[in-house]
Image 1 (cartoon, rainbow, N blue to C red):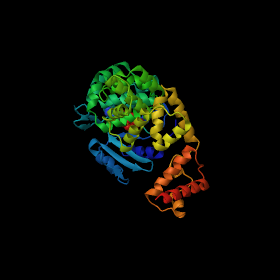
Image 2: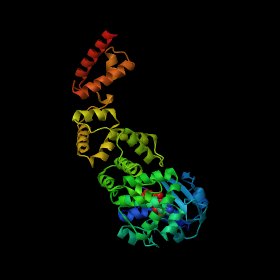
Image 3: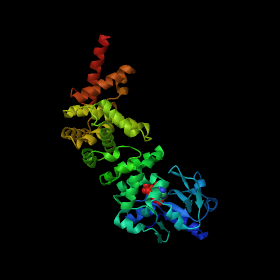
Length: 413
Ligand code: ATP
Ligand code: MG
């Protein structure tokens, strides 16, 4: 097994040399044992935050989690989060513990964690603490709640969504009682904040084992009522959707069918379907725009020629158009063909934007064409002419065409 990064080991040794315990916990232990890349190292430590901060007083610290016991220590490898052994107090609103309580031992800290595979701890010498059978569940590729699943999901319904997300990322099955509890309590996840829902949802959609995790759609029922009853045809298409964006579009379409009785058809339906899927989420403006644009593409009839695909890919944002085609290709051979054409446009260096034209605005103004809105219009006409096959995308051909168009226009004016 690969050694730990030295900045992690050094921090752990410093704690131990000061008579404190320091254990790696959570995702980094799980991913290490699985041989997956580790993206962040979290430590759980025996000392209170004040002492953690004092022991690392020669480092820059991130202290906004102090109330919950977390001190971030800025190291050369990034921020190393050190959280005091703790349990969560009583839970309010299925989400936020009323208080946290610092505790003296590791086992209690591990007991508050969501799944057995996330409830293991590793020392810097390679000693593993695994009081809940996490290793056995890793080997069996099972997600199982630590403790009684109903109680754990009632305490914090975010765990239900995390369950679906880890299944999609890791390709694990969900243990029987955990799954039953999750389905039974799925409605409680309506209380989770939009930010947290969105973070889990995006990871669920991006999972390498997404197709296998489609049977966990009922776990999302509290966030997207109806999603648990997705018709089989949509699920089949979803199994083939290659990207998170195309998956989101198919889920929007399927959810629309569940709620409105028929698959989305025209622009209004698709726009509505995407809006309904986005409503419980907090997406960035860019991402929401991408989905809205893709919905527009889905409402169009399939393109009938390579050149038409080329033109569409110049009009729409290329990623929105691609997502739409990836979503539609599984169930529709005309769309599959359209997607193949799009891949050819993308890989063949076909000019699709003003930036890719062989002449720039500056070169045109150098030839005496004045800058301004008319220049922008002229460039767009050049792009249109290239796509229509009326000219080659070379400086000489474009300059000649631009001058000709300009003279004509000047003559008209
Ligand atoms: P990732 O690879 O996505 O970071 P992770 O398991 O590290 O996965 P985090 O959200 O970083 O997930 O949380 C770190 C650890 O904290 C988890 O492994 C788990 O032990 C614990 N944890 C996080 N969220 C919860 C929760 N809602 N309920 C119980 N334990 C949690
Ligand atoms: Mg993590």
